[in-house]
Image (cartoon, rainbow, N blue to C red; front, top):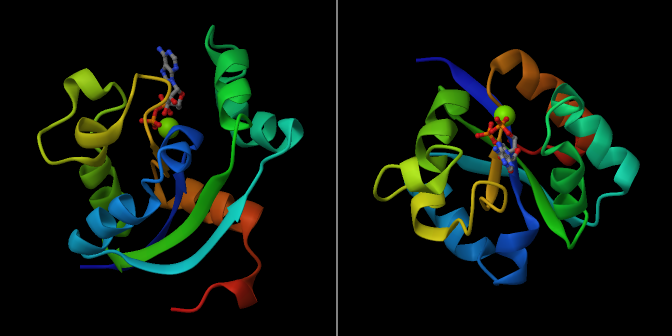
Length: 140
Ligand code: ADP
Ligand code: MG
C-alpha cells in the first residue's frame, strides 16, 4: 500500500447545507486523514483554471457559476491509496449512480451540485494540491 495525498473540495451545495462535518466524518471513517483544510470563496478565474480540462464541455459555465456561488472547503487528504480511496467514498459523479453509503449518494443534490471534488489521479492530485496549498500549510 502506498501512502498518498489527494486533493478534495467540499462544494458550495454542501457548505450551504452545513454538511462539512458530516462529509469530513465520512472521509475519516474511510481511513483518510485531513492534513490541510481551509474555507475559501473561489474567484471565477480560479474556478475556470481549476476545471480547465472541462472548458469545452456544455456544462462548463454552469459548473464555474456553481463553484463560485458560495464558500468551498479545500482539503488535502492523506492515507493508503488516498486517491482511489477518496474516489470510492465520494461515489459516482451522478448521485443517481452512486453506491449506497457514499458521500454523493447520501448528500449530493444533482450531477452538478454533487457535494465533493476528488482528484482522479496521483499526478492531478499533486497539481491540484499545489494550486491551493503551500507546503507549510500541509501537516501530515
Ligand atoms: P468528477 O467530479 O466525478 O471527477 P467530472 O470530472 O467528470 O466528475 O466533472 C467535474 C464536475 O463537473 C462534476 O463533479 C460535476 O460537478 C460537474 N459535472 C460533470 N458532469 C456534468 C453534467 N453532465 N452536467 C452538469 N454538471 C456536470
Ligand atoms: Mg473529475
